Amino acid sequence: MIDYKAPLADMRFVMFDLLKLDRQYARIDGGANATRDVVDAILDEAARFSETVLAPLNASGDEQGCVLDKATATVTTPKGFKEAYAKYVEGGWNGLTAPEQYGGQHLPESIGAPLKEMLDSANLSWGNFPLLSHGATEALRLHGEEWQRDAFLKPIVEGRWTGTMCLTEPHCGSDLGLLKTRAEPAGNGTFRITGTKIFITAGEHDLTENIVHLVLARLPDAPPGVKGISLFIVPKFRVGQDGRMGERNAVTCGAIEHKMGIKASVTCVMNFDGAEGWLIGQPNKGLNAMFTMMNTARLAVGIQGLGLIERAYQGALAYARDRLQGRSMSGPKFPDKPADPLIVHPDIRRMLLTQKAFAEGGRALGYYAASLVDLVERAPDAEERRRAEELLSFVIPITKALLTEAANECTYLAVQVLGGHGYIHESGMEQFARDARITTIYEGTTGIQALDLLGRKVIQTQGAGLKQFLEEISAFCHAHAQDPSLTEFVGPLAAVAKDWAALTQEVALRARDNPDEIGAAAVDYLFYSGYVALAYFWARSVLAADASAHDDAFKHAKRATARFFFARLLPRTFAHGAALRANADTLMNLPAAQFG
Image 1 (cartoon, rainbow, N blue to C red):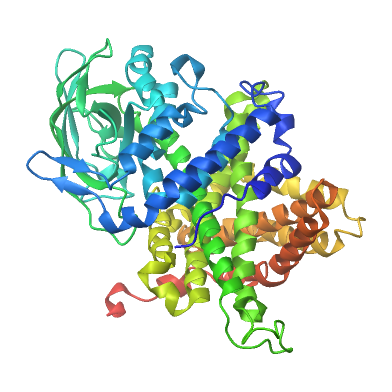
Image 2 (cartoon, rainbow, N blue to C red; image 1 turned 90 degrees about the vertical axis):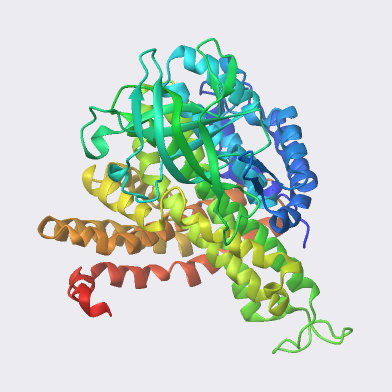
């Protein structure tokens, strides 16, 4: 297993040279405390914690997994996980971006993004335990009653409790309109929740004294479908309005899933047998509150993809520099050695540069999305908040899907670079490939993200967020059209952005006559959108690097990687564009019976 080293130089470059977040912090709520010295100290300490506490537990956690004691319905996490969580809480990481009134530090969300990247690079399974606590915090903050925020949010922010999100049931996954979990009024302001939820991350564990489940369920008089879903707080141990913990609630872990990857992250079947719960928000409006958690979680999973890309790249790069294999086709590069290292070979460089391009370009995209969260929540002007919300809604499905799909590609490439050593367990590369696979599935599959992007965020809104993003790209291209140092990037970026707009119009027109056109085009549209977004951030990265105080080697590496992206990855849009322009008939004309 190759050691993890947090890429602090590039993180700081993206935050301060590329995105200029220090300027944004100066004018948003909670940003005054995010001085450069404070942010640098946070990044340094997060790197130390990730490198020295979490990374050493990654392989052992994968080997040990979590263990369910069926007699007590309790789960024991791998050795060292509980101690690591205690250190995490002691360091104040749990409340980094949470409101001060509930015990948090109220720092900008865009500072939480690099922290999360480091946690996920170091140990993705461990990072899943505090993951949904953040979403639960947001749901309670925005939709809960004041007593609920005091009783439940404060201990979550403190790290004494964790949160979950309970949506999926055995008979329904993404189609929440089919869920059957019931909520019966108990007559004292509480409800009795009955049903089974599956695939519940951190549904049961030994890290904290209580677990707060946010559960979708139906009231007796609820209308059918998604319009009849309500959201409830159902704690592992009952909690009164005074915040005191009581006896064990009627919610138990019935089983833990045996998974392909993230084996140290417990994924539970949760049984609710008349468990006591409290309604969050209005009856039958549960999806409004749940989507607050869902959007937070989708961005977080995109950052998980980024973390795995970076970790796989570091492992592949270290091996390629060290492993001797053959001679360079243009002549020996290390004649004093019996063979040249792998990194001299063009195809190895193709794989490494693909990883590097996705890691650094994806970091820009992911941190950009996090900066929009800051504006949505904390910008002083209402119109700026509204526009940021439109743009964030558009960017989230791209970020989640593209970075997780790229994680699958890049972890696969890491295995390829190591060859046979990548396939065996000891190198650690095969674990990253297994761990990456789930990221394209949970919190909404790539297909769900694609439908959300094209169907909801583009066609239903008449392209509100897309127009903003295209305006950004157009303004950048116009401002630098005559800059000779950017000519090789600005021209292709302007052209592909123009085609992106045209493709959007074509699909929207076809969808008027045949709604299947949206589903047929959605995934290719998402990938096309993602590659354009990365091209934009790579062009901006070259400009930002040239203007920065970084040394010539850093600037040259940015430009060379941008050239690689534009020459070898951006052309993937040609294939996606061709597929987009093929109508739905190519998918729908074969009768279902003829698939056999």
